[in-house]
Image (tube, rainbow, N blue to C red; front, side, top):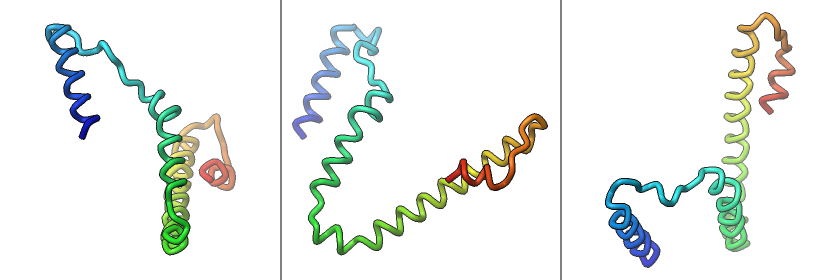
Length: 102
């Protein structure tokens, strides 16, 4: 709640200082978030999980992991096969496209 109020106050101050013309004084980079901010958040969330809760939900965690990897590799394999089959210059075997997807 405190962070929300701080964000609203900061946004209001920036809006009044810039007189509504430019709200791009502070830019948020996706690269900054995904490379530098997100990994510590995920690590901390995983570190705070209690062992008992983790092992009670172990099957669910593994199931989501396996299904997620299967879906991701299937989509990447299909996209790679589709993109390489339409070009004559690139003749790639099905095994190679599956290995790239995996």
